[in-house]
Amino acid sequence: MTDTVNTTLAALAILAQVAAVLLAVAIVAAAVSPRARAALVSSWEGVARQAVWAAWVVAAVATAGSLYFSEIADYPPCQYCWYQRICMYPLVVILLVGALLKDRRVSLYAAVFPVVGAAISIYHIYIEVNPDKESATCRAGIPCSTRWIDEFGYVTIPVGALSAFVLIGLLLVVSFIAGRRSGDATPPGGATGG
Image 1 (cartoon, one colour):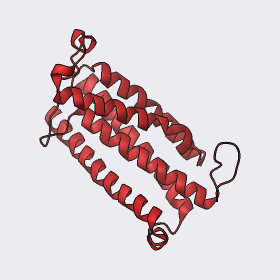
Image 2: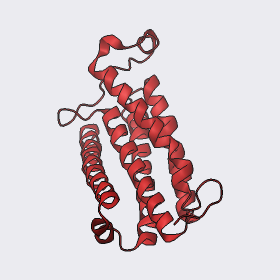
Image 3: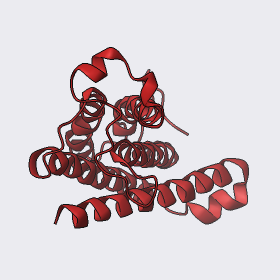
């Protein structure tokens, strides 16, 4: 069963990577081309609401996967895994509350979590690839260079976390842009979006 779950979660990470690339291309296209912007985003309000819910689903699946790895598969989390969890777990609550309250500002106050989490994930991947760069602190406990899973030739736990953080971050960008377009977001300082 563990192998099946590992493979499924790794496949979801790849799906998140594909979705993130497509979303990034759409955001850039909408930013540089008014025609693409009109074609890609016809209903800003609906896009904003769905983007927050989609980000919540990604955070919830990532959190469930994280808990599965430590509580069911018995993969003890290393120091950097804990830091990534600190960035992912609050997103489940913050995004759910933001989505339920239809608060378009959730993209502003949730944004720090995927940004910091992605940075930690990138460093964790670096440590996995370069175990000799691992600090003595990491080596003293659970080694941060340990690859508990290695699916499809590159998907490890921090790669999965990075995939989720990037997709959540891009969905929050879409939510922010869409909220400003529909006039629902109020940027910091109280000025209305335009």
